[in-house]
Image 1 (tube, rainbow, N blue to C red):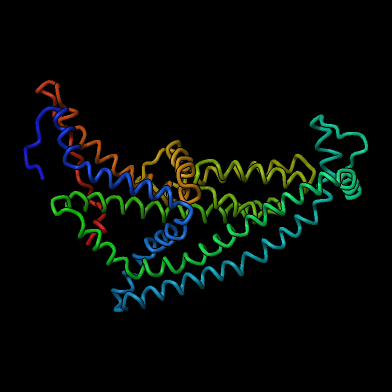
Image 2: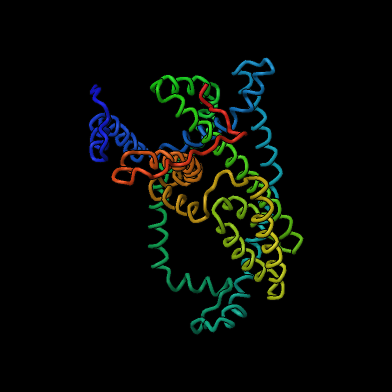
Amino acid sequence: MNTDPVPGTAEDYVRFHLREHWPWLLVGAGLLLLAVMLGPILMPFVVGAGLAYVGDPIVDRLQRLRLSRTAAVCVVFTALTLAGLAALLLLAPMVYHQFLALLRNIPDWLVWLQTQALPRLGVALPAGVQLDAEGLKAIVTQHWSEAGGFVQAAWERVSQSGKLLLITVANLLLIPVVSFYLLRDWDDLIAWIRGVIPPRYLPKVGELAGEADGVLGAFIRGQLSVMAALALYYAVALWAAGLDLALVVGLIVGLISFIPYLGSIVGVLIAVIAMLVQTQDPTSLIWIAVVFGIGQFLEGNVLTPWLVGDRIGLHPVAVIFAVMAGGQLFGFVGVLLALPVAAVLAVMMRHTKRQWLLSPLYRAGTPQSLPAAPAQPPASDEPTSPLP
């Protein structure tokens, strides 16, 4: 390896580091390309790693109670399984009954759409077309040849999707297996990563890993708490407002509330349509507006500041961009990884900025009196590094 000192000019500084580290840059680019190519099969491993990361602190606490690592992992998995089954047994019947009510109300919805909604919008159906059972039957009979072709094409598409369905089921079954083994061997994995880091970089990597671990842990715990609180609030509040589909709407809002404003927008649209079809009274929308107005206030002024706080430091625009970029690059896996990766990148960007302000490339050609970049004082509650 070349041991010449790093030159002082900016151009020589960049040339030196490119010459010294180009093989590792190629390795990094190759790994990134491999991750993109393997995107369709990464979902169970990404979700499993996320579950292992979340569960590791609990397992560590159980180990301090003199349980072995494997026994502690089994305890955590048993508790999570029982909690999931309890939630499923509690929520599934209610969601099922609400969907049955939704299906039973479809004829009334069609009548309301034809007799009230469309005329108020100035839309007129063609002569002889009725949105009821007999009218829909007549439409299907009249266009049976086209409908038959559509059904055939749909069936072919479903048949071709059989392999995709099997892959999806296999991936879902792999998640607990992957998370179990990763959680059991988490400490060994961290030790292996520490062992391949050059010793001269360990202090800096440990500092970055500690801060990223604190930010990421705060983000995951806080965001999951906010999502659960919003789902509970909207389900209860919309039920009190008289909406039959309150539970379904509440769960939808809670699940997608990690994207700023998207959960509320989608929830308002679904709740407004469902309430109008259910009551056929525009004044009932006042209660929907009240529910979502209070929900927005609670989310922005109570839940997010209290449960998430300001440690993550991600602007709402950055969150939206991260989710869209992750979905574009890696599909569903990218959406799952977008916000955790963005939170870690925010930590790295803060450190990179401090190094950039001190680098020869930034300071080349500037007056000698240029003051040194201020160093960020260490916080008293700086998280410890996850690297042992």
